[in-house]
Image (cartoon, rainbow, N blue to C red; front, side, top):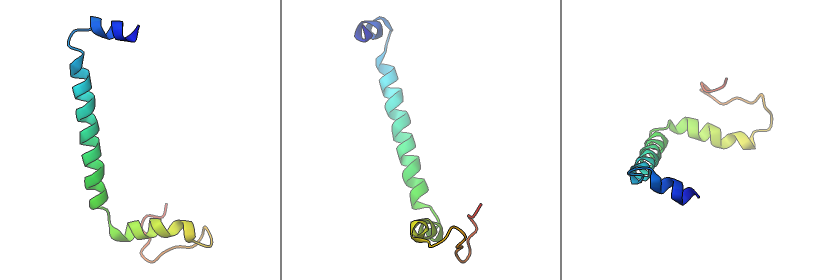
Length: 65
């Protein structure tokens, strides 16, 4: 049923190309964002699961909400 419905749509392959392009752009954006992250922020977030209490703060903790 789905195959037949998609065959009736003209030039359906463009949707696959658009979807792939959106995925690639998003993937590259996440990689760039990850590389440009502040290293102290990454360290603070990495240490959060090991913190003894929820009130513990880190030096220069500007990300605490």
